[in-house]
Length: 411
Length: 168
Image (cartoon, rainbow over the protein chains, first blue to last red):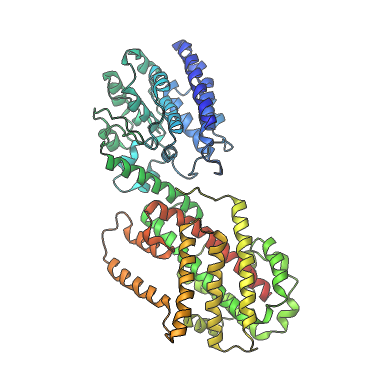
């Protein structure tokens, strides 16, 4: 939490600096400062996830997206530096769409404040950004920073996720709505939104420029941006005017029901889709799959095939075991522990022994072929999970052993 | 929410722990078989033992910090206890049979084809596949599934390398 504390201060300082910048020079002066803020925020995100692999590459488009909205695209070049994969942000879903990154930071209040600040850049209102920095309360909004698209997802999280994958970076404006409730509206100038918000034809979030619903000028800007239809149904929902209450853990987004049940439900749904993304990476060959049902089918098939492989291999081991058991275990324990599942280190060892056991060897050869047939029956296992040595064994062309099938049925 | 222990070093340690325990168990099983030409019954018995040893060594290598490993350990323990008691009483029925019967009942109930908007059928199937999955929430279930898949893949790799070692 120390990082978070210092990061907060950093934000404050930067915000003060930004306040002092003349609005004309914003486009030039801001990107660096914003970059600094973003990096500090990213460093803050790092702290809760000690062991997670970096998913920093996803931040790049987010930041660049949001900034391009504000600064007429001139800042995009400056944010190219963010889009480096070595970004220390530790986000949980590498494959997820960017907007879902902010979703599942559980109940760390400091953490969630960062995302409003980042998302604030997505809005056009600079002074409102500053307000949000100063006003984002501590101890609030754990998980509701996810984009409104999630709420509008009628078909479940993942379906829309894939569609909106590249686009919803502009969702980060959402914090605006929430913070606005507390911000003094007097600070907002009428000219700011229009000056800052270039009609940037950035296809990825312009429709989501809905700034807070309290002021009419904001609504005008929002309607202007709605010409680019991305999740238009979500935006129409958000065109409602109700300001949201400040929940302690989850903030309702604009246009969403404030019912605690639906909020919790949304959080849960986001968690689930995050986990589905993780699973998508684990299961080979599932990168293209969009849709919860299909993905679950793949996962189930994969688990079943793995379990069947374990059964089959245990059967094979049972047959070979008595012959080769006694003196081998010690050697095995050294070799297997080093081998990467390929057994490459143990190639030359056992040729003598296997020649003395024709029965077992024949069984094994047939069994090896049986492995391929059974696995291909149940699940088209992608080649990635087959060890290379197994491939070579298959290629030597054994005839299938009928006893393999019969013994399998005995199990 | 469990922290996701998905770093590479963790996988390596799980693999070594599993390999060690599994090899020890294999040794024990192999030492029991005495005849040079085992009958099919012996083979099937040994297959079952090897499979149990694989599951048990995997579950103990993971430890009790995962729901599925805890469930598996409890299942194996209760099964072994029940087997002992059943053999003493002369009852040849396995506790596993009861489990399958219960599972069958559940399967019949769940086979109604609801409109699969949220993937409920698959979720139920997944619950059956992952040990201990019936009593979990969906997000925890997915988490456990991910870890379970990782461990299963490790198990397959180790066992396959052992087999190749023996047969090569």
